[in-house]
Length: 111
Image (cartoon, rainbow, N blue to C red; front, side, top):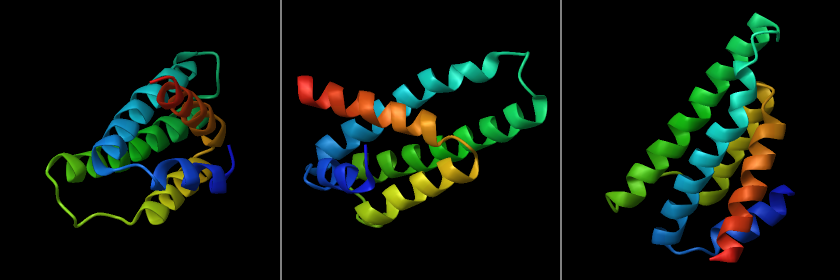
């Protein structure tokens, strides 16, 4: 999913749908992070990636809270998506975030 496709998918949603999207994305990201449980992987890399997963979860849950509390003091859509993509890139989680975004989008299309 390209950044432009992600923007097209997310920005057209109303606030309740954005909150649901963020909740589903957060859940899906945890699924794809389970590969880090593999103790045969390099420990330093695992720690870095788990730190990144925590950073992504922090941003997702923070934005979700803003929607649930109807707080308009939140990131603009494009800024939030840029933060998520940049954090994923920095922590070598682009593939996991991409997979979670694809699955989240499919869930939305099916409902």
